[in-house]
Amino acid sequence: MKMMMRVGLSCHLLLAGIFLDVFAATPEECQLLVTPLSLADPSVILGKTNFLAGYTDYGAFKGILKATESSWLNITESNIASEVLMSQENRINGTCVGSTVAMTLEGQSAKVAFADMNSVLSVLPSCNGCFVFYINFTATNVKKLLEHINVSDKATADQAQGSSLYLMGKQLTLSPSDLEHFRKQASCLGFMGEPDFLFNPEKSFCREGEGIRMPYSQ
Image (cartoon, rainbow, N blue to C red; front, top):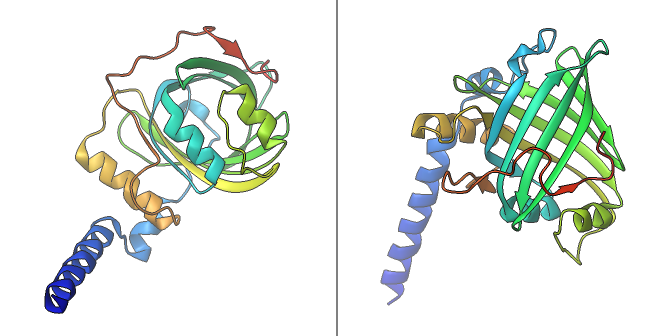
């Protein structure tokens, strides 16, 4: 019996090692995978894209991603220099939630501030017609934010700090190689395991303006 347990444990560790090796990248590869793109020309992010896969390291936001059925962004130019407008529609727990916020572009990063949340975003290279948002955020009044989107987490503190990684694309599905590329990026940035969100193309999207509008929306 002990021998069988040792064999089983060894197999488990071997499989875990194989899984980690598949998505591990060398330091040189990581440098290429996570070097931000310049936003001097914002065309790389303009237009409508679908949320295809995502990670986060903050517990309450993991709950949001698990409750998310579909989400899309539409980023358009603004009349203000170095600013774009980001509109989104999310289907969360069966409810459509939408918003529009301003995004300020500064070199290789973008800043978004709304309500009690501040985010700094970098855009990382991805598949054709795709881009990856790497987001570092701080937030207060988190419970109030969760209430607005119909997500409950009684254990959540009112202040939050963390990171997220979102893969956006014009298509509805990812090829195995594109998903592996994203997982390698995630591994380089400290996100491990399976994505917290992986879009199911059988799910439907909310229409623009459908459902609840967030109170901070422009």
